[in-house]
Image (cartoon, rainbow, N blue to C red):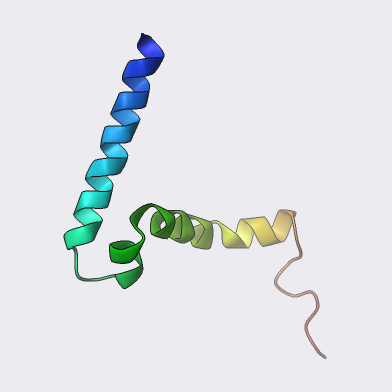
Length: 64
């Protein structure tokens, strides 16, 4: 029963976030794809850390 309440609260939060994004005028990406748009902006924020530890650093693979 406790997990069901947490799931309902999470679903409500996502629905409210999507409803807010559908009426905002600043970002077309958030207006058209609310949940995916927030995931993109989150990954864009932590991108340097992902490149540093997983892929490559910012200075590697650049031409001389």
